[in-house]
Image (cartoon, rainbow, N blue to C red; front, side, top):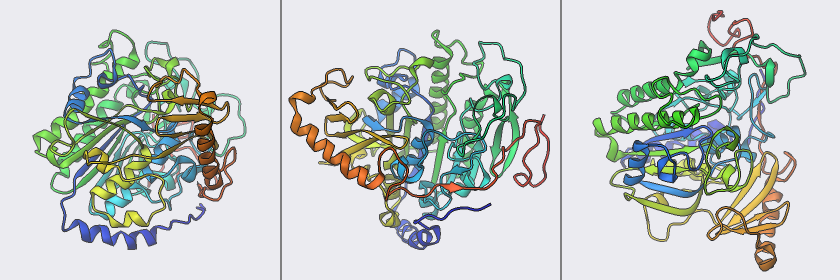
Length: 494
């Protein structure tokens, strides 16, 4: 299979990364845990106003910091690309939406990820959960700096309807077979709809299970058990744990122990299970006396989908939009003794900040050699005087630049609507007519970005090449056969 090259080549990075290894030997490096929830609404957890009980997240906020203006992307794959690479999603993953099974494209294997930065600095690395940056072997976490991987490579709704992927467990499973439906040309971003193959559970380089309805219920618990085990096994060295849950993405499959706990919906039940999972991770860190040397981030990959029971109050909008409710996400940072208890920040921060921030905390000088859009927000997290977030943030949806923010001012470019988010977080009052000077300034900033990453096209000077393979195949075919060449010996899963 042919992989297209990227400007940032990994051999050069690993040469530069020697600075990280040298410096780290003279300075303490914190463990880092990044917990990423799927489709969690801004107000789906207690610290941001939820009506359900989330005691572990409440305690995390009480002992740490709430990031009130933290941005992801409108949908899954772009958000995760920003998180892994420190760049605007369009720069590193120029696709119109998200990736699907058997996609010919994915995050370029030559891209430098946060896992590679930290691994070069002596960290043990693991990704446990949903990846969603390409499902072909070349694109999976074990080729992007993670020593271990356990999870499904995309969303839990990207499988056969008859096996539980298109409906929640309070609805009867429809009849049919995997891959059933009218055949059509497959887009380069993968197989959609009724033709989708069985869901594969992957461990490191191998498909180990075909996920059916019963297994959907176990995702959160199994991921949590793996996460705890990884922490226990690596407690004597710095570690980076990326824990991207499939929860709470539709279909909603909380474990049976949590079904009905909220008294509201399966989506809220699953959010309660997420809180339990966070408690397991934090308790493990406390028990091993690692809490004072571990930074834990809790966040979501995009705003919650209102039509599936999420709550983004007081934000306007839903997943898939660049309204605040589609892209601003509930985010907590916890590091006892380092991050002030009960603190919060209104600084503009984003998922693309995690790579430079983690790299800085790990004393990796090589990060400065990378072309990044994110910035080191460790001064914000640590409460340093005069620490700031981004002066300007650009809201991309796929190829399209739809809005730009500077300070409290957000301009929606299409309609020319201007909102003061400090006074009007719900984007209810358009004040463009009263502030023509601010509109002009934000339009100028948008034009500067368009010159770099473009608008309504993927062809722009700053856009990097996608990873690409020839003849992509599902990891499991409709008859249950694992694709040849993925496992050492092809086999059929029941």
